[in-house]
Every structure is written in structure tokens, then in C-alpha cells.
Length: 104
Image 1 (cartoon, rainbow, N blue to C red):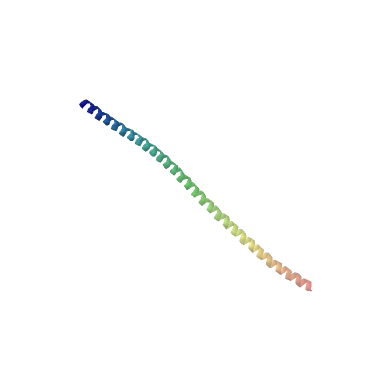
Image 2: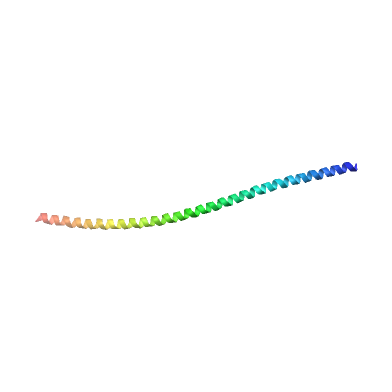
């Protein structure tokens, strides 16, 4: 009877120990997987941050170019408006002169 009780207790201890090891082992695997995924995601995040910095730099460069082009366009427009204004005045003077000459 003592022997049977010892066998049962020993069996229960072995089963409990095996169950604990199984749970501990899968938890470690899961922890390793989560850890490796975290490392991968951190690397990916760093790459994204680097790419974002490049894109911001390119955007700033494009905005500077846009401002230069806009300033050039404004200068050209002002020049054309001045030329147009000058030719309108000249046309009025010439029309007045033609009318004056025709009336003589």
C-alpha cells in the first residue's frame, strides 16, 4: 500500500513537472518570437524614419526651387506688363499723331 501511494505521488509529481516544463518552453519560444519581431520592427522603423527624413529634405529642396521659379515668373510678368504698358502709350501717341496728320 505504501508502495502504491509512493508510485501515485511520484507519478503526479512527474506529470506536474512535465506540464510546467512544457508551459515554460512554449513561453520561451513565444518570448523569442516576440523579441525577434520587435527587433525587426525597430529596424523597419529606423528605415522608415530615414526615408521620411530624405523625403522631407527633398520637399524642402522642391519648395526652394518653386520659390525661385515663382520669383522669376513674377519678374517676367512685371517686365511684360511694363512693355505692354509702354506699347499702349506709344500706340495712343501714334494714333493721335495719325489723326492730327490726317486732319491737316
